[in-house]
Image 1 (cartoon, rainbow, N blue to C red):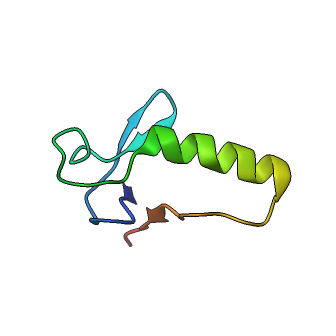
Image 2 (cartoon, rainbow, N blue to C red):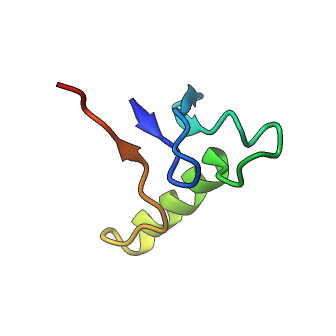
Length: 60
């Protein structure tokens, strides 16, 4: 499971991008599509730098 770094809501996978369902209703500002675009360019230019990290929780 992956969680939104802004509101801790479980993210939904769409088109291989994790998005926050609360963004669609204006309740959260995390936009997975925009984040994916930013991360792509950062990895291309600076492989070790990331603006946001998507939190993944592994339950035992």
